[in-house]
Image (cartoon, rainbow, N blue to C red; front, side, top):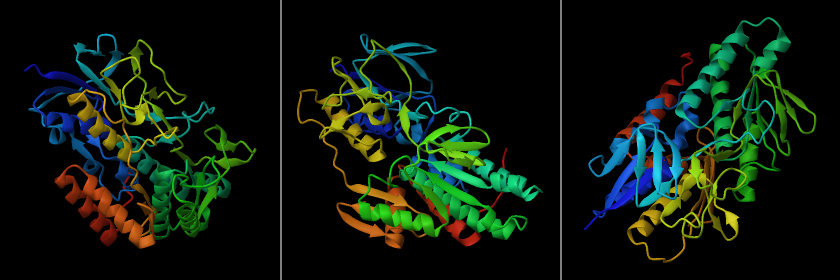
Length: 406
């Protein structure tokens, strides 16, 4: 029997997990394309930014997850997609398939805010996390020798834009890191000179969570000394300051952008229907309308459920991957895709968090422990699990260091 030739673009949660499901069936001949040769486990990226977790421990070689004897892995960038021929175009040629899976992932969305892209640190890759850590330490080192008090305060103003899970987890990690090291290692800096701000256009933090957990997160941020600015859309960003729509100006010692995502740009012909964030609109079977056998999954796809877009989360991507693999191997139209929401959880620094699982709400240490165990169990390689667990133990026993690599 002739095998089904399947081309998968992207080795994130959606693309890689789809490959794993497809490769378990002898009818599939899968080729996976990605410009990186590793899978980035993003839930721990904020801990990489402060040195809690070693950067290499949150990446897993693709060939350790997708069996290279069953999946042909091409470490190259796809520059174009031809839906008519069902082919991917790369620098080395054109590759034609029977089925395409588009899971190219996402990039930062700056919403056309003047100066935002040029004057911030994005937070999408392991390189971003390393750059952020270096930048935080650089700010401290510069402030330690700065004689002008006003300039010093500007250097010590740390801002995070976006109060979703990524932004909240990151800002609490940064606040905790700064609180630990400033007093112990930087006597030239008074803790009162350090400001940590969370800037959010919406009226609350963690808006996808139940209101009681959003309030609990807000209380935790306040206890950590984070100034939360809700209902505060950013109007423009310069190297010196951030200007809000209200006219207020905030010093831009450092700005981390976690305020939204858009689909990663890949040229597709003929053009497909996209939303304002560049996401490919799909039908209820996760296929691109008018192009049978072309699926779009994960952050690059717009899938509606109950008239509302599904969130760009790993949980959605993993469930879509399993459904798409089943549809590819059994193409007869069946039950439309339905995301089963098990809840949300967020880490809020050491021994604190909020968690909603099947309607059960947890806070503080219990939520933090659930978050740690669940995220660790989701890591797709045992070696990395043990490495991350070791990193946590070392961070608790010896604290984090302030070596800067630049």
